[in-house]
Amino acid sequence: MTDRQFAAESASIAYSLTGGTGAPVGYAHGILLSRAAVRSLGIFDLDVIAAGRPLLTYDQRAHGHSTGRPKSADYRFEQVAADLLGLLDEVGIDQPIDFVGSSWGAAAALHAAIAAPYRFRRLALLIPPVAWESGPTQLRQWYFDTADTIEEIGPAAWRRQWAEMPPLPIFADYPQAKFSPDVDDELAPAVLRGVGRSDLPDPAALAVLPHPTLILAWDTDPLHPVTTAERLAELIPDATLHVARSLDDVKSWTQRTAAFFAE
Image 1 (cartoon, rainbow, N blue to C red):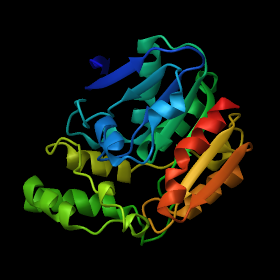
Image 2: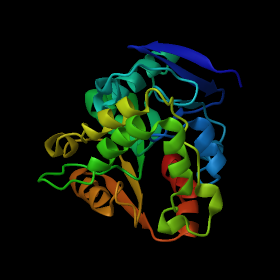
Image 3: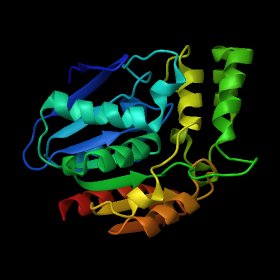
Protein backbone atom coordinates (compact mmCIF):
# COMPACT_ATOMS: atom_id res chain seq x y z
CA MET A 1 0.00 0.00 0.00
CA THR A 2 1.28 3.46 -0.91
CA ASP A 3 2.10 5.72 2.01
CA ARG A 4 0.35 9.00 2.52
CA GLN A 5 1.87 11.99 4.29
CA PHE A 6 0.42 14.06 7.11
CA ALA A 7 1.92 17.51 7.69
CA ALA A 8 2.30 17.60 11.46
CA GLU A 9 4.02 20.39 13.36
CA SER A 10 7.65 20.46 12.12
CA ALA A 11 7.43 16.95 10.66
CA SER A 12 5.88 14.92 7.88
CA ILE A 13 4.24 11.73 9.16
CA ALA A 14 4.06 8.74 6.81
CA TYR A 15 0.97 6.61 7.35
CA SER A 16 -1.36 4.11 5.77
CA LEU A 17 -5.05 3.40 6.34
CA THR A 18 -6.42 0.12 5.07
CA GLY A 19 -10.08 -0.39 4.27
CA GLY A 20 -12.51 -2.46 6.27
CA THR A 21 -15.68 -2.30 8.28
CA GLY A 22 -16.39 -1.71 11.93
CA ALA A 23 -14.56 0.28 14.57
CA PRO A 24 -11.08 1.27 13.35
CA VAL A 25 -7.86 -0.01 14.88
CA GLY A 26 -4.67 2.03 15.21
CA TYR A 27 -1.05 1.33 16.13
CA ALA A 28 1.95 3.44 17.19
CA HIS A 29 5.44 1.91 17.47
CA GLY A 30 8.23 2.53 19.95
CA ILE A 31 11.44 4.54 19.76
CA LEU A 32 14.04 3.43 17.16
CA LEU A 33 11.45 1.24 15.43
CA SER A 34 9.00 1.80 12.55
CA ARG A 35 6.01 0.05 11.00
CA ALA A 36 8.32 -2.03 8.82
CA ALA A 37 10.63 -2.90 11.72
CA VAL A 38 7.74 -4.03 13.92
CA ARG A 39 6.39 -6.30 11.19
CA SER A 40 9.85 -7.76 10.58
CA LEU A 41 10.08 -8.90 14.21
CA GLY A 42 7.32 -11.43 13.56
CA ILE A 43 5.95 -11.16 17.09
CA PHE A 44 2.88 -8.91 16.95
CA ASP A 45 0.50 -9.25 13.98
CA LEU A 46 -1.50 -6.09 13.40
CA ASP A 47 -3.50 -7.57 10.53
CA VAL A 48 -4.82 -10.33 12.78
CA ILE A 49 -5.74 -7.77 15.41
CA ALA A 50 -7.61 -5.58 12.92
CA ALA A 51 -9.38 -8.63 11.40
CA GLY A 52 -10.95 -6.80 8.46
CA ARG A 53 -11.51 -3.53 10.26
CA PRO A 54 -9.89 -0.27 9.11
CA LEU A 55 -6.25 -0.25 10.26
CA LEU A 56 -4.26 2.96 10.77
CA THR A 57 -0.48 2.63 11.14
CA TYR A 58 2.22 5.28 10.89
CA ASP A 59 5.90 5.98 11.39
CA GLN A 60 6.49 8.31 14.29
CA ARG A 61 8.39 11.50 13.52
CA ALA A 62 12.05 10.97 12.53
CA HIS A 63 11.44 7.22 12.12
CA GLY A 64 10.86 5.06 9.05
CA HIS A 65 9.51 7.20 6.21
CA SER A 66 8.61 10.16 8.44
CA THR A 67 10.70 13.29 8.88
CA GLY A 68 11.53 15.57 11.79
CA ARG A 69 14.03 18.14 12.99
CA PRO A 70 16.86 18.09 15.58
CA LYS A 71 14.87 19.60 18.43
CA SER A 72 14.38 17.39 21.48
CA ALA A 73 11.04 18.95 22.46
CA ASP A 74 9.57 17.57 19.22
CA TYR A 75 9.88 14.03 20.58
CA ARG A 76 8.37 14.45 24.01
CA PHE A 77 5.36 12.31 24.82
CA GLU A 78 2.99 15.27 24.61
CA GLN A 79 4.10 16.08 21.06
CA VAL A 80 3.72 12.54 19.73
CA ALA A 81 0.27 12.46 21.35
CA ALA A 82 -0.57 15.63 19.39
CA ASP A 83 0.72 13.90 16.23
CA LEU A 84 -1.68 11.03 16.87
CA LEU A 85 -4.69 13.26 17.40
CA GLY A 86 -3.79 15.32 14.34
CA LEU A 87 -3.50 12.17 12.26
CA LEU A 88 -6.96 11.01 13.37
CA ASP A 89 -8.30 14.35 12.14
CA GLU A 90 -6.32 14.05 8.89
CA VAL A 91 -7.76 10.66 7.97
CA GLY A 92 -11.28 11.56 9.08
CA ILE A 93 -11.67 8.96 11.82
CA ASP A 94 -14.41 10.45 13.92
CA GLN A 95 -15.63 7.36 15.76
CA PRO A 96 -13.79 5.98 18.80
CA ILE A 97 -10.78 3.92 17.79
CA ASP A 98 -9.26 0.82 19.37
CA PHE A 99 -5.63 1.79 19.73
CA VAL A 100 -2.41 -0.16 20.38
CA GLY A 101 0.68 1.69 21.50
CA SER A 102 4.07 0.12 22.16
CA SER A 103 6.51 1.87 24.53
CA TRP A 104 6.79 5.42 23.07
CA GLY A 105 3.51 4.66 21.29
CA ALA A 106 1.89 3.64 24.58
CA ALA A 107 2.92 6.98 26.07
CA ALA A 108 1.45 8.77 23.05
CA ALA A 109 -1.79 6.84 23.41
CA LEU A 110 -2.16 7.65 27.11
CA HIS A 111 -1.50 11.37 26.67
CA ALA A 112 -3.86 11.50 23.68
CA ALA A 113 -6.60 9.58 25.48
CA ILE A 114 -6.47 12.01 28.39
CA ALA A 115 -6.51 15.04 26.07
CA ALA A 116 -9.36 13.70 23.91
CA PRO A 117 -11.01 10.69 25.56
CA TYR A 118 -13.89 10.64 23.06
CA ARG A 119 -11.44 9.65 20.28
CA PHE A 120 -10.74 6.22 21.81
CA ARG A 121 -12.80 3.12 22.61
CA ARG A 122 -10.23 0.71 24.05
CA LEU A 123 -6.48 0.93 24.66
CA ALA A 124 -3.81 -1.75 24.52
CA LEU A 125 -0.53 -0.60 26.07
CA LEU A 126 2.48 -2.76 25.21
CA ILE A 127 5.65 -2.51 27.32
CA PRO A 128 4.89 0.92 28.82
CA PRO A 129 8.13 2.83 29.39
CA VAL A 130 9.84 3.65 32.65
CA ALA A 131 8.00 6.49 34.38
CA TRP A 132 7.67 8.67 37.47
CA GLU A 133 11.30 8.28 38.50
CA SER A 134 12.92 10.44 41.17
CA GLY A 135 16.33 10.62 42.77
CA PRO A 136 19.86 10.80 41.35
CA THR A 137 19.92 7.34 39.74
CA GLN A 138 17.30 6.91 37.05
CA LEU A 139 16.86 4.28 34.38
CA ARG A 140 15.92 6.94 31.84
CA GLN A 141 19.51 8.15 31.94
CA TRP A 142 20.09 5.52 29.22
CA TYR A 143 18.45 7.85 26.70
CA PHE A 144 20.81 10.71 27.48
CA ASP A 145 23.89 8.48 27.60
CA THR A 146 23.01 6.94 24.24
CA ALA A 147 22.45 10.37 22.67
CA ASP A 148 25.88 11.45 23.94
CA THR A 149 27.47 8.28 22.57
CA ILE A 150 26.03 8.83 19.08
CA GLU A 151 27.44 12.36 19.01
CA GLU A 152 30.82 11.26 20.37
CA ILE A 153 31.54 8.21 18.17
CA GLY A 154 29.24 8.88 15.22
CA PRO A 155 26.13 7.06 14.00
CA ALA A 156 28.01 4.35 12.09
CA ALA A 157 30.03 3.27 15.13
CA TRP A 158 26.93 3.44 17.31
CA ARG A 159 25.07 1.17 14.91
CA ARG A 160 27.93 -1.33 15.06
CA GLN A 161 27.76 -1.25 18.85
CA TRP A 162 24.01 -1.72 18.70
CA ALA A 163 24.36 -4.76 16.44
CA GLU A 164 26.78 -6.37 18.90
CA MET A 165 24.57 -5.88 21.95
CA PRO A 166 23.01 -9.07 23.35
CA PRO A 167 19.21 -9.35 23.12
CA LEU A 168 16.95 -9.01 26.10
CA PRO A 169 16.95 -12.29 28.05
CA ILE A 170 13.36 -13.01 27.06
CA PHE A 171 14.48 -13.04 23.39
CA ALA A 172 17.74 -14.97 23.89
CA ASP A 173 16.55 -17.80 21.64
CA TYR A 174 14.84 -15.58 19.04
CA PRO A 175 17.44 -13.99 16.73
CA GLN A 176 14.67 -12.30 14.73
CA ALA A 177 14.12 -9.95 17.68
CA LYS A 178 17.32 -8.11 16.75
CA PHE A 179 16.65 -5.05 14.60
CA SER A 180 18.55 -2.15 13.13
CA PRO A 181 17.33 1.21 14.45
CA ASP A 182 14.99 2.73 11.87
CA VAL A 183 15.60 6.33 12.86
CA ASP A 184 17.28 9.21 11.04
CA ASP A 185 20.92 9.23 12.18
CA GLU A 186 21.06 13.02 12.36
CA LEU A 187 17.94 13.18 14.50
CA ALA A 188 18.52 10.21 16.81
CA PRO A 189 20.19 12.22 19.64
CA ALA A 190 17.31 14.71 19.74
CA VAL A 191 14.78 11.87 19.70
CA LEU A 192 16.49 10.12 22.61
CA ARG A 193 16.77 13.29 24.69
CA GLY A 194 13.15 14.18 24.03
CA VAL A 195 11.99 10.79 25.25
CA GLY A 196 14.32 10.99 28.23
CA ARG A 197 12.80 14.31 29.26
CA SER A 198 9.25 12.94 29.05
CA ASP A 199 6.99 11.22 31.52
CA LEU A 200 3.71 9.38 31.53
CA PRO A 201 0.62 11.39 32.53
CA ASP A 202 0.02 12.47 36.07
CA PRO A 203 -1.41 9.60 38.15
CA ALA A 204 -4.45 11.69 39.06
CA ALA A 205 -5.37 12.00 35.38
CA LEU A 206 -4.90 8.28 34.81
CA ALA A 207 -7.17 7.50 37.76
CA VAL A 208 -10.18 8.87 35.84
CA LEU A 209 -9.31 7.41 32.43
CA PRO A 210 -12.61 5.90 31.20
CA HIS A 211 -11.31 3.41 28.63
CA PRO A 212 -11.02 -0.34 29.10
CA THR A 213 -7.27 -0.87 28.96
CA LEU A 214 -5.13 -3.95 28.36
CA ILE A 215 -1.57 -3.65 29.65
CA LEU A 216 1.01 -6.10 28.31
CA ALA A 217 4.52 -6.15 29.78
CA TRP A 218 7.53 -8.44 29.71
CA ASP A 219 10.14 -8.91 32.38
CA THR A 220 13.94 -8.42 32.34
CA ASP A 221 13.73 -5.08 30.48
CA PRO A 222 14.97 -2.12 32.56
CA LEU A 223 13.59 0.54 30.18
CA HIS A 224 10.13 -1.07 30.29
CA PRO A 225 9.94 -2.32 33.87
CA VAL A 226 7.08 -4.42 35.14
CA THR A 227 6.68 -1.88 37.95
CA THR A 228 5.44 0.75 35.48
CA ALA A 229 2.87 -1.67 34.07
CA GLU A 230 1.75 -2.64 37.56
CA ARG A 231 1.37 1.00 38.59
CA LEU A 232 -0.70 1.74 35.47
CA ALA A 233 -2.92 -1.25 36.26
CA GLU A 234 -3.48 0.12 39.75
CA LEU A 235 -4.28 3.62 38.52
CA ILE A 236 -6.50 3.02 35.47
CA PRO A 237 -9.96 1.99 36.72
CA ASP A 238 -10.77 -0.60 34.02
CA ALA A 239 -7.35 -2.13 33.42
CA THR A 240 -6.18 -5.70 32.86
CA LEU A 241 -2.49 -6.58 33.22
CA HIS A 242 -0.59 -9.52 31.73
CA VAL A 243 3.15 -9.99 32.27
CA ALA A 244 4.99 -12.26 29.84
CA ARG A 245 7.92 -14.29 31.12
CA SER A 246 8.67 -16.32 27.99
CA LEU A 247 8.82 -15.81 24.23
CA ASP A 248 5.71 -17.95 23.70
CA ASP A 249 3.89 -15.74 26.17
CA VAL A 250 4.91 -12.61 24.25
CA LYS A 251 3.70 -14.22 21.03
CA SER A 252 0.29 -14.68 22.66
CA TRP A 253 -0.16 -10.89 22.69
CA THR A 254 -1.63 -10.82 19.20
CA GLN A 255 -4.54 -13.05 20.16
CA ARG A 256 -4.94 -11.40 23.57
CA THR A 257 -5.23 -7.98 21.94
CA ALA A 258 -7.54 -9.21 19.19
CA ALA A 259 -9.85 -10.78 21.77
CA PHE A 260 -9.78 -7.64 23.89
CA PHE A 261 -10.71 -5.43 20.95
CA ALA A 262 -13.49 -7.85 19.94
CA GLU A 263 -15.33 -7.27 23.23
